[in-house]
Image (cartoon, rainbow, N blue to C red):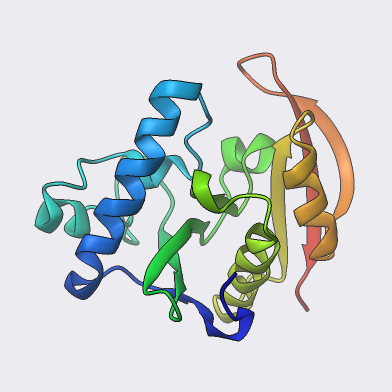
Length: 180
């Protein structure tokens, strides 16, 4: 396991291209084989093998007209081993849909690195980014059956507000983290 102090969030750039491709190829194979949940979905939205286009379209910019809110994508970088461990998508604001069952943060750890505590670190670092964005309270949501995700949220100060049923009939737990 890497030294936890050498884990940090980075923005994607050309220097990380091979790390991105290696991680997402592994992740996609797991999704295809095991039917895993592709979270954060935005990391899989475009073809990462066409890197320049992928990088250009990775984040939603402010003033975008198609109903998407501005967001930031970060990758959990393990400096000791020069690899990506996961990804997190931070929505800068919430619309009605996001506030109902999605929240500010979408995160995921690559399949080979799960159950090692990295998710808790990733969410903690993401909450720091939310604070930098001036978000006073962050909403984090997870499926009720996703025990690991719920534990990660609670470990980072999440307080359960309620449970809702989303448009696909899934039970979603909604947690708030006070960042003030």
